[in-house]
Length: 299
Figure 1 (cartoon, rainbow, N blue to C red):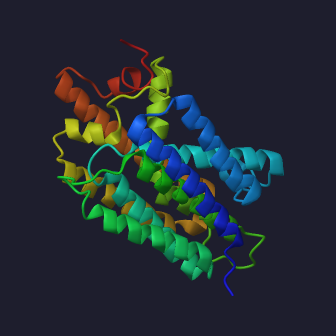
Figure 2: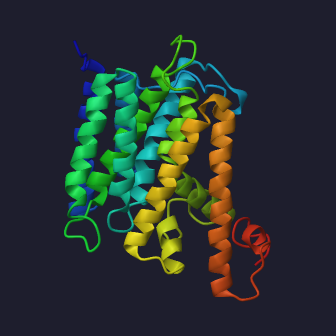
């Protein structure tokens, strides 16, 4: 007998978020109102649906946390991942393809763990995205908008939390996946790292962290001459490599897995920054990646 009771809260939250995205796409929505409704949706999932992290699983050598702090952190994670997929939706087919990769991976992972309600949700989302992508690849006939990207982000964020919890060492004598947080980070790394980088750069450059710009990874690859389809293929390939790498490294521990993934992302980001800088100014130096474009120590 498959119990869908907990999964129903995800469906309910998705309906609320769908209405939010639709309103924003058709008529626009005040950013504060949008953010407050995302808090409501995330709170429903964490408080009523019990989609919360109960431990940091050794990441930064932190383990079990109090329910209050675990709940608040989970709300932040859901909102952040939710918006990360929304922000990566900048070229035809990108957010949908990354969402398809993430939901397919989570679907397989849950099926292996016999967590069928979540496997069904992940595969259903994967199928829905595939049907949409037929018309969304460049040149796109239809566009995702906030309605689609926010729901993909919500589902991926919640599935990541659930995947981590059902593979918690201690709760499960022999989990199907070790270093589940590290693997979950790898599955959603492209939008998550891009959003973290964007916010960090904006803060370092004393810019409003939520103000839009053209500094996302897809915009940067466009500056290097990548076409829309090449951007989708390149970032999808990178996502697949990170997921595969995390599965091979799962016995290393969460701190090691996440550290390796982040280091790879930072190195590749530095290479892209350097190449863009060289195109902008032939005198651009490698140190300018850190001193000029990251921390803005020199101007």
